[in-house]
Amino acid sequence: MAYKVEKTIAEINQRIREGKAVVVTAEEMIDIVKTEGPVKAAKEVDVVTTGTFSPMCSSGAFINFGHSVPTIKAHRVWINGVPAYAGLAAVDIYIGATEPSEDDPLNKVYPGEFRYGGGHVIEDLVAGKKLLLRAEAYGTHCYPRKYLEKEITLADLPYAVLCNPRNAYQNYNCAINLSERTIYTYMGVLRPRAGNANYATAGQLSPLMNDPYYRTMGLGTRIFLGGAQGYIVWYGTQHNPDVPRTNKGVPKRPAGTLMVMGNLKEMSPRWIMGVSMLGYGCSLSVGIGVPIPILNEEIASWTGVSDEEIFTQIVDYGYDYPNGIKRNYGEVSYAELRSGSIRVLGKDVPTVPVSSYVRAREIAEILKGWIKEGKFLLSEPQEPIPAPASPSLLNNNQKGAKEAEEE
Image 1 (cartoon, rainbow, N blue to C red):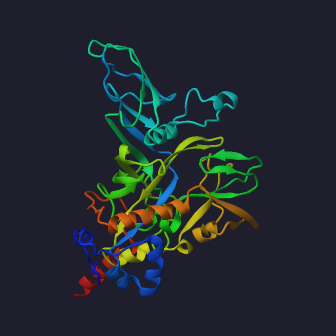
Image 2: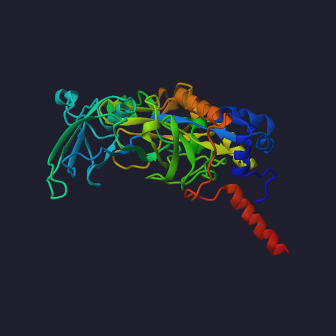
Image 3: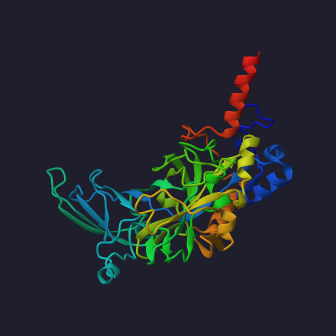
C-alpha cells in the first residue's frame, strides 16, 4: 500500500535523541486527527502514548531465592503463606497473582474469601517489605536439605522478573447479572436483575485499541510496565484477533492479548498492586503503557479512535457466561459506559469501571515524558503478533489485482 506519509522507527528514534520528536497521548491524538485529518496528523506526530491500569489475573513472577547451606532442591514453597510453583529448578519458583494464601484468616471465617494472595506478595516485594519464605524438599545427595525458612526482600533476591502470560486485553465484556441473586465475579459484584453493569479497559487510551491490527508491536516491543521499562515477549494466552470489528478495525468483543515481562526490581507499588475481589479471590492490578510510532496515516487514523467509536457487548454473568452461552444483550460504546448509565432491556443501569481511567491517563503522560526527555526509545518488533488483514489492506490488494488484470 502506498502511503502519503512513511516513517521508520529508526527515524523516529533519531528525532527522540535530538529532542525533536512530537509525542502526544492517545487522548490528545483524537482532536488532532479530527481537526487535521490523518495525513497531516501523521506528518506532525511521531509517537502516541497509551495506558491501562486494571486487575490482570494472568500475571505472576519468576523468582530465584538463592542457594542455602546446605543446599536445597525445593519441592514445595510458600511466601507469606501463599503457595508458589517449585517445579522449575532447585531454587527457582513462579508465583501466580491469583494464588490465595493457605492460612488467610478471612478464609477461615468465610470459606472462599481471601484478602491476601500472590498479587499481594508481588506488591509487597516491590514495596520493599520483608516476607517469610518457607521451602520443603525430599532431599538428594546434591541437595540434602529438607526444610528452609528465611525472611526475604526484593533486594535480597538474586533474580525477580514479572512475567504475565495475558495482559492488556483488547476490549472486554460489559458484565450484567440477570439472575435473581447477587453474584461475585472477576468483574466485581453484580447485583441481580441487571442492577449494575461493570466494564473493563481504558477505552480510547487502551494500547490495543490504538493499534487494532498490531502493526507496530510484537516480540521485543519496549513498553511501560509496572512503572519501569518492560517488553512484549509474545502474544498472550486467549489471543483471538478474528472477531467482529468496526469499520475502524476496533474489535467489538475480547480479542488480542499481550504476554509481557520486566525487571520486578525496577517497578513501583503504585503500578503493581495486589487486589482482593469480594467472593472471587485475589489478583494483581498492572500498569501498562505502549508507545505507538506513527509510521503512516493509517496508523495515525487508528490512534485517533475515540470512546464514541469503541463498542463492546453486554453479557449476562448470572447464567450465560458460566455456562458458555454466546449471547449478548446489545452493544454499547465506551462513551456510554463512561457516562455512568446505559440502557439495558428497557431500563437504565448504572455502570461501574473495573479499571482506572485516571491511572491510564497518568501512565500515558509518564510515558510521553520519558520519550520527550530521551529516556525511552522505541524498539523494532522482531516478530509480529498474529492479526487478521486490515480492511484497507484488503481493499488495496483487491484494487491492485484488478488494475493488474486490466493491464
